[in-house]
Image (cartoon, rainbow, N blue to C red; front, side):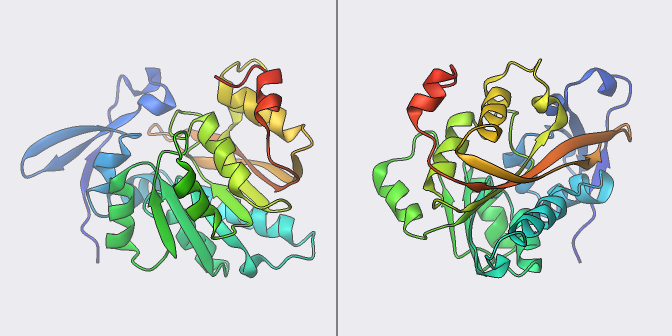
Length: 259
Protein backbone atom coordinates (compact mmCIF):
# COMPACT_ATOMS: atom_id res chain seq x y z
CA UNK A 1 0.00 0.00 0.00
CA UNK A 2 1.36 3.42 -0.98
CA UNK A 3 2.23 5.93 1.71
CA UNK A 4 -0.30 8.74 2.12
CA UNK A 5 1.29 12.17 1.93
CA UNK A 6 0.35 15.21 3.97
CA UNK A 7 -0.81 17.81 1.45
CA UNK A 8 -2.13 21.30 2.08
CA UNK A 9 -3.66 23.55 -0.56
CA UNK A 10 -3.36 27.37 -0.24
CA UNK A 11 -6.51 29.24 0.70
CA UNK A 12 -6.84 33.00 0.32
CA UNK A 13 -4.67 33.60 -2.73
CA UNK A 14 -5.62 30.45 -4.67
CA UNK A 15 -8.55 31.99 -6.53
CA UNK A 16 -6.27 34.61 -8.12
CA UNK A 17 -3.86 32.05 -9.61
CA UNK A 18 -3.95 30.78 -13.16
CA UNK A 19 -4.29 27.03 -13.59
CA UNK A 20 -0.60 26.59 -14.43
CA UNK A 21 0.44 28.73 -11.43
CA UNK A 22 -1.43 26.71 -8.80
CA UNK A 23 0.65 25.14 -6.05
CA UNK A 24 0.38 23.06 -2.90
CA UNK A 25 2.40 22.40 0.24
CA UNK A 26 3.91 19.00 0.94
CA UNK A 27 4.42 18.39 4.64
CA UNK A 28 7.33 16.15 5.61
CA UNK A 29 9.90 15.42 8.29
CA UNK A 30 12.15 18.12 6.83
CA UNK A 31 9.41 20.74 6.99
CA UNK A 32 7.09 22.20 4.38
CA UNK A 33 7.79 22.32 0.62
CA UNK A 34 5.92 24.54 -1.82
CA UNK A 35 5.45 22.77 -5.16
CA UNK A 36 3.68 24.05 -8.28
CA UNK A 37 1.23 21.71 -9.96
CA UNK A 38 3.33 21.88 -13.13
CA UNK A 39 6.61 21.10 -11.35
CA UNK A 40 6.32 17.51 -12.51
CA UNK A 41 10.00 16.76 -11.94
CA UNK A 42 9.54 17.34 -8.20
CA UNK A 43 6.16 15.62 -7.96
CA UNK A 44 7.27 12.45 -9.76
CA UNK A 45 10.18 11.96 -7.38
CA UNK A 46 7.74 11.35 -4.52
CA UNK A 47 6.04 8.01 -5.06
CA UNK A 48 2.25 8.24 -5.14
CA UNK A 49 2.16 12.03 -4.83
CA UNK A 50 0.92 12.70 -8.38
CA UNK A 51 -1.89 10.16 -8.04
CA UNK A 52 -2.91 11.43 -4.61
CA UNK A 53 -3.16 15.06 -5.73
CA UNK A 54 -4.71 14.81 -9.17
CA UNK A 55 -6.73 11.61 -8.97
CA UNK A 56 -7.65 11.11 -5.31
CA UNK A 57 -8.07 14.74 -4.25
CA UNK A 58 -8.94 16.54 -7.49
CA UNK A 59 -10.79 13.67 -9.24
CA UNK A 60 -9.03 13.83 -12.62
CA UNK A 61 -10.90 11.82 -15.26
CA UNK A 62 -8.93 12.67 -18.41
CA UNK A 63 -7.08 9.39 -19.12
CA UNK A 64 -10.33 7.44 -18.89
CA UNK A 65 -12.23 9.99 -20.98
CA UNK A 66 -9.68 10.22 -23.79
CA UNK A 67 -9.28 6.43 -23.93
CA UNK A 68 -13.05 6.01 -24.08
CA UNK A 69 -13.68 8.49 -26.89
CA UNK A 70 -10.70 7.14 -28.83
CA UNK A 71 -12.17 3.65 -28.61
CA UNK A 72 -15.56 5.04 -29.65
CA UNK A 73 -14.02 6.76 -32.69
CA UNK A 74 -12.20 3.62 -33.77
CA UNK A 75 -15.41 1.61 -33.57
CA UNK A 76 -16.66 3.81 -36.42
CA UNK A 77 -13.98 2.23 -38.62
CA UNK A 78 -12.85 -1.30 -39.40
CA UNK A 79 -9.74 -0.95 -37.23
CA UNK A 80 -9.22 -2.94 -34.05
CA UNK A 81 -8.51 -0.80 -30.99
CA UNK A 82 -6.39 -3.45 -29.26
CA UNK A 83 -4.11 -3.81 -32.30
CA UNK A 84 -3.00 -0.17 -32.33
CA UNK A 85 0.61 0.81 -31.74
CA UNK A 86 0.31 3.88 -29.53
CA UNK A 87 2.73 6.77 -29.03
CA UNK A 88 1.96 8.34 -25.64
CA UNK A 89 3.31 11.90 -25.92
CA UNK A 90 3.91 13.50 -22.52
CA UNK A 91 3.54 10.05 -20.94
CA UNK A 92 4.56 11.22 -17.48
CA UNK A 93 4.48 8.42 -14.94
CA UNK A 94 2.25 6.21 -17.08
CA UNK A 95 -1.30 7.09 -16.02
CA UNK A 96 -2.58 7.28 -19.61
CA UNK A 97 -0.61 4.22 -20.61
CA UNK A 98 -2.14 2.28 -17.74
CA UNK A 99 -5.63 3.34 -18.86
CA UNK A 100 -4.94 2.23 -22.43
CA UNK A 101 -3.82 -1.14 -21.12
CA UNK A 102 -7.18 -1.47 -19.38
CA UNK A 103 -8.79 -0.94 -22.78
CA UNK A 104 -6.72 -3.72 -24.31
CA UNK A 105 -3.87 -1.88 -26.04
CA UNK A 106 -0.87 -4.17 -26.35
CA UNK A 107 1.86 -1.94 -27.87
CA UNK A 108 2.82 1.28 -26.06
CA UNK A 109 5.66 3.73 -26.69
CA UNK A 110 6.14 6.45 -24.07
CA UNK A 111 7.72 9.86 -24.60
CA UNK A 112 8.44 12.61 -22.09
CA UNK A 113 10.89 15.47 -21.85
CA UNK A 114 11.99 14.90 -18.25
CA UNK A 115 14.00 12.00 -16.85
CA UNK A 116 11.95 12.03 -13.64
CA UNK A 117 8.86 10.92 -15.60
CA UNK A 118 10.70 7.91 -17.00
CA UNK A 119 12.15 7.04 -13.59
CA UNK A 120 8.71 7.25 -11.97
CA UNK A 121 7.25 4.96 -14.63
CA UNK A 122 9.98 2.37 -14.15
CA UNK A 123 9.50 2.58 -10.39
CA UNK A 124 5.68 2.49 -10.30
CA UNK A 125 4.65 0.75 -13.53
CA UNK A 126 7.55 -1.41 -14.70
CA UNK A 127 6.97 -3.12 -18.04
CA UNK A 128 4.04 -0.92 -19.00
CA UNK A 129 5.75 0.54 -22.08
CA UNK A 130 7.56 -1.38 -24.81
CA UNK A 131 9.93 1.59 -25.01
CA UNK A 132 10.15 4.96 -23.25
CA UNK A 133 12.07 7.89 -24.74
CA UNK A 134 13.23 10.95 -22.80
CA UNK A 135 13.37 13.46 -25.63
CA UNK A 136 12.60 17.06 -26.52
CA UNK A 137 10.34 16.72 -29.57
CA UNK A 138 11.11 20.29 -30.63
CA UNK A 139 14.76 19.26 -31.13
CA UNK A 140 14.47 15.68 -32.29
CA UNK A 141 17.56 14.50 -34.19
CA UNK A 142 17.11 12.32 -37.28
CA UNK A 143 18.50 9.13 -35.70
CA UNK A 144 16.10 9.32 -32.76
CA UNK A 145 13.22 10.26 -35.03
CA UNK A 146 13.90 7.21 -37.21
CA UNK A 147 14.19 5.00 -34.13
CA UNK A 148 10.79 6.13 -32.81
CA UNK A 149 9.26 5.89 -36.30
CA UNK A 150 10.51 2.30 -36.56
CA UNK A 151 7.81 1.30 -34.05
CA UNK A 152 5.31 2.18 -36.82
CA UNK A 153 2.90 3.82 -34.41
CA UNK A 154 -0.58 4.27 -35.84
CA UNK A 155 -2.02 6.16 -32.89
CA UNK A 156 -0.90 9.12 -30.76
CA UNK A 157 -2.37 10.21 -27.45
CA UNK A 158 -1.50 13.14 -25.25
CA UNK A 159 -3.43 13.93 -22.08
CA UNK A 160 -3.53 17.03 -19.86
CA UNK A 161 -0.22 18.33 -21.21
CA UNK A 162 -1.21 20.69 -24.02
CA UNK A 163 -1.39 24.45 -24.07
CA UNK A 164 0.51 25.38 -20.92
CA UNK A 165 3.97 25.06 -22.42
CA UNK A 166 4.39 21.48 -21.21
CA UNK A 167 4.19 20.28 -24.81
CA UNK A 168 4.91 23.08 -27.31
CA UNK A 169 3.13 23.32 -30.66
CA UNK A 170 6.20 22.16 -32.56
CA UNK A 171 6.53 19.04 -30.40
CA UNK A 172 2.86 18.15 -30.96
CA UNK A 173 3.15 18.57 -34.74
CA UNK A 174 6.42 16.61 -34.90
CA UNK A 175 4.79 13.72 -33.02
CA UNK A 176 1.69 13.98 -35.22
CA UNK A 177 3.91 13.64 -38.30
CA UNK A 178 5.61 10.50 -36.96
CA UNK A 179 2.27 8.71 -36.75
CA UNK A 180 1.36 6.72 -39.83
CA UNK A 181 -1.15 8.20 -42.28
CA UNK A 182 -4.68 7.01 -41.40
CA UNK A 183 -3.48 6.65 -37.82
CA UNK A 184 -5.55 7.80 -34.84
CA UNK A 185 -5.12 10.86 -32.62
CA UNK A 186 -6.59 11.33 -29.14
CA UNK A 187 -5.95 14.34 -26.91
CA UNK A 188 -7.56 16.88 -24.61
CA UNK A 189 -7.34 20.65 -24.24
CA UNK A 190 -8.63 23.21 -21.78
CA UNK A 191 -11.98 24.57 -22.98
CA UNK A 192 -10.70 28.16 -23.22
CA UNK A 193 -8.12 27.06 -25.82
CA UNK A 194 -11.03 26.42 -28.17
CA UNK A 195 -12.21 30.01 -27.86
CA UNK A 196 -11.41 32.12 -30.93
CA UNK A 197 -10.42 34.97 -28.62
CA UNK A 198 -7.44 32.87 -27.44
CA UNK A 199 -4.61 34.03 -29.68
CA UNK A 200 -1.90 31.77 -28.23
CA UNK A 201 0.05 29.75 -30.77
CA UNK A 202 -1.09 26.41 -29.45
CA UNK A 203 -4.76 27.35 -29.38
CA UNK A 204 -4.62 28.63 -32.95
CA UNK A 205 -2.74 25.54 -34.10
CA UNK A 206 -5.36 23.17 -32.70
CA UNK A 207 -8.23 25.14 -34.23
CA UNK A 208 -6.51 25.25 -37.62
CA UNK A 209 -5.67 21.54 -37.45
CA UNK A 210 -9.23 20.53 -36.60
CA UNK A 211 -10.59 22.36 -39.64
CA UNK A 212 -7.77 21.29 -41.96
CA UNK A 213 -7.43 18.42 -44.42
CA UNK A 214 -4.77 16.84 -42.21
CA UNK A 215 -7.14 15.56 -39.51
CA UNK A 216 -10.63 14.09 -39.68
CA UNK A 217 -12.38 14.63 -36.35
CA UNK A 218 -14.57 11.73 -35.23
CA UNK A 219 -15.47 12.79 -31.69
CA UNK A 220 -15.37 16.00 -29.62
CA UNK A 221 -16.76 16.05 -26.10
CA UNK A 222 -16.75 18.62 -23.32
CA UNK A 223 -16.26 17.05 -19.91
CA UNK A 224 -15.02 17.75 -16.38
CA UNK A 225 -11.27 17.27 -16.43
CA UNK A 226 -10.85 17.66 -12.68
CA UNK A 227 -11.65 19.95 -9.78
CA UNK A 228 -9.71 23.08 -8.90
CA UNK A 229 -8.27 23.27 -5.40
CA UNK A 230 -11.39 25.30 -4.48
CA UNK A 231 -13.59 22.43 -5.68
CA UNK A 232 -14.67 24.20 -8.89
CA UNK A 233 -15.00 21.97 -11.99
CA UNK A 234 -12.40 22.58 -14.71
CA UNK A 235 -13.77 21.70 -18.12
CA UNK A 236 -11.79 20.40 -21.08
CA UNK A 237 -12.55 19.10 -24.54
CA UNK A 238 -11.56 15.54 -25.44
CA UNK A 239 -10.91 15.07 -29.16
CA UNK A 240 -10.39 11.95 -31.23
CA UNK A 241 -9.76 11.80 -34.94
CA UNK A 242 -7.86 10.27 -37.80
CA UNK A 243 -4.70 11.59 -39.39
CA UNK A 244 -5.04 12.11 -43.14
CA UNK A 245 -1.55 13.45 -43.93
CA UNK A 246 1.56 14.98 -42.37
CA UNK A 247 1.28 18.67 -41.51
CA UNK A 248 3.84 20.51 -43.70
CA UNK A 249 5.77 23.58 -42.59
CA UNK A 250 4.09 25.50 -45.41
CA UNK A 251 0.70 25.04 -43.75
CA UNK A 252 1.99 26.33 -40.41
CA UNK A 253 3.74 29.24 -42.10
CA UNK A 254 0.58 30.22 -43.98
CA UNK A 255 -1.27 30.43 -40.67
CA UNK A 256 1.51 32.33 -38.94
CA UNK A 257 2.17 29.41 -36.61
CA UNK A 258 5.77 28.53 -37.38
CA UNK A 259 8.37 30.29 -35.26
